[in-house]
Image (cartoon, rainbow, N blue to C red):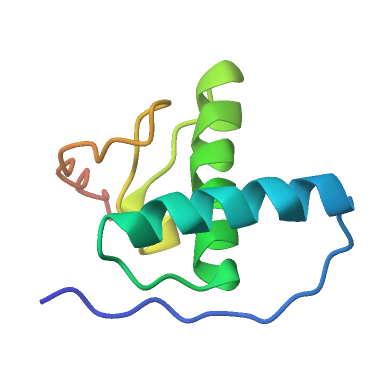
Length: 88
């Protein structure tokens, strides 16, 4: 079982139109039987957006530094990579 990553609370202002779009996504997810909060939808959207930006700019993420699983630009989970051995 993977250890839960530490979270940090943050606040951000966003346009009402974004909130409306997130609510539509949440409603669509609820139709599949999932009970989702607005915060959960925001976290998923942000995680996928970060993955897209990283891919666009050639930034490699590491589960060793983030503690989270990596995703592709489409938001799909990447297979875990083996850590490189550090020389002493």
